[in-house]
Length: 114
Image 1 (cartoon, one colour):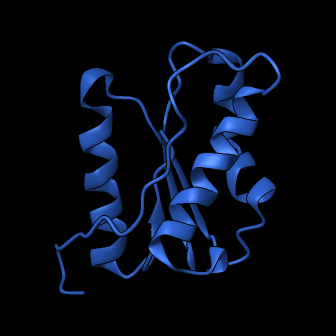
Image 2 (tube, helix red, strand yellow; image 1 turned 45 degrees about the horizontal axis):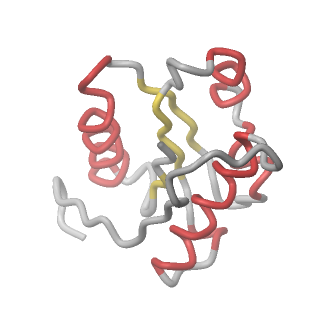
């Protein structure tokens, strides 16, 4: 991939609804693994995670910032974890951070859980 270029190669989502039998972590993990599968990569190819700070769920913010997502998903190749908090610009800033990770050689594949 050329420097300063970015491609979204996989996505994951859950249907809108209320799921009382599933925790917020269950949903995060499911969507992350769905994105990895959709991309057709091995989960250990993910070298960075850039997550949006969950404003509506502050109790999980610290867990995400301390690397719970790559730890729980078993992302053995993940070396970088970052949390982005930029209000309404968080999503685009996550993409910019991923682009910087890739362009600088810090990571080849970056997972952005939302």
